[in-house]
Image (cartoon, rainbow, N blue to C red):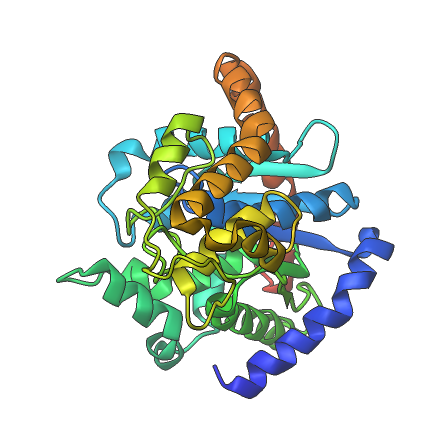
Length: 354
């Protein structure tokens, strides 16, 4: 991915922002996560809060739980079902609402018609293109696997099937996922050209202005695997304990300076996101009271903000049937959509039985 392609994608995303709100019926969103554990604050402020905004604006939203993808680089298959349930709990508690909006939560392992699209899509991509995918290279490095399975190389094509099965034209992503969107656009265009039928839209990446949330180590992106995160479902006491463990620096006077004081600035940013106060203003209020006061302010802001979300999550834990029904409704709608799309694909490829 070149800097030029990223800048072009960013510009296109900016142009979309207002139209998404003003003309929601023009758009369909595909977004999702891998079921490898519970969501944390980085997920919430980096993506979940924006999904809720799109949903509440009236945009049809498909929320994918990418369980098959977990098999490419993890050995946690014994817990995939549990994590799918936990992920759905987090979604519902945060405000994704399948009851009152066109929001569909589903695991792609339950949508066979979706996965069937992967086969013709693979014929539209060269092995060279898959080998050059920078995100795949990063995933392989991060996985520390001695032997790389074929699923790791082909999952960008599977991800294209995830996006295109519902004819999504908007995909909220971070910069690191842009190569997948570019490949998906190529697959859509190549399919339409090869089979001379306009079946698929060419989806556009939608970037948000949410800052990158660092973990409690203050140096890396917040991540479950790095053990530097605060889970959305964490209790108040757990949150206080985790924030107390967060790395800061030796300067007692608190200032917001992301470049030179990333650890302190990250805590200020978390406090800001949870209180709607400017991080510089929070820093000025703390002044020379040191990191102890900073951590107290941050923990209080997080606990106040997430209190209603955590309360709702506790209530949902007592109503497993509601959570299960949300998934079953999502699966039903996703399958209905996938069956329609696959029928169009089969017809375009002249594979219908006469």
